[in-house]
Amino acid sequence: MAKITRKTALRKAPVLKKKAKPAAAKSKPPSKKSLKAMKPWTPPEVREAFSRFRKANPEPKGELEHVNPFTLLVAVVLSAQATDAGVNKATRALFEIADTPQKMLDLGEERLREYIKTIGLYRTKARNVIALSAKVLNEFGGEVPRTRAGIESLPGAGRKTANVVLNMAFGEHTMAVDTHVFRVGNRTGLAPGKTPLEVELGLEKVIPAEFMLHAHHWLILHGRYTCLARKPRCEVCLINDLCRWPEKTV
Image 1 (cartoon, rainbow, N blue to C red):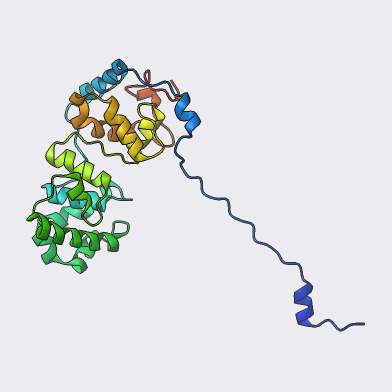
Image 2 (cartoon, rainbow, N blue to C red):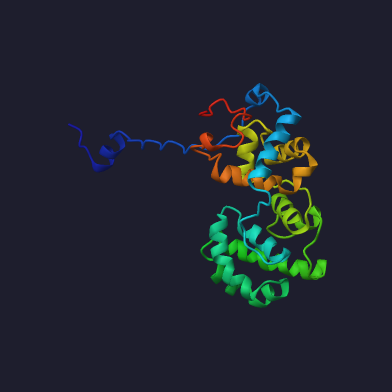
């Protein structure tokens, strides 16, 4: 009889494979088929929807707290992958001592991290805020640039950041598309698109100019408090009779 060694036994023993964990569900942009299936809103319907938003909330405000264009820029950069409430909690004390690019540089990256350490990705964000403060001072005379290209050239700032700052600080008719606006644009059929840029351009195309100053705030608030991701509150929705979503509950 052949002698079975420990090495032989291990070689012959069946290999037990670990069960693969199911992949987490991810929200996907709508397919081309679903985009084509939606009946486009008519201009009177769009005007009616935004007239209702305006009547319900004539002067909507962004929920990021700030005291000037620079602190708004910093707050928006910090808000990436974070909640406005979480950013506000961190920046209230920060903006009391560092509300200009020079003061932010004087504070320094290490001390800045202490103020924003409750925010996700705070180390990278602290590095970006210090870098953008230096660039605003050195290349823009200490003033936040008033062009999209200028803002997008700053560390940590992208198209959405530029649109928010241009709209809120300088009154430009820009459309900042965050996760809420992206969802509302697609779910309602108001401006379906597979990317935030497609939704942004679609909304700018259909929304009348008279509503554009506040349009992105109305849509953000609608997505944040009514048209929720998991359980949209269709029963209290101001535009449920206009919405194209086939699964709406009213």
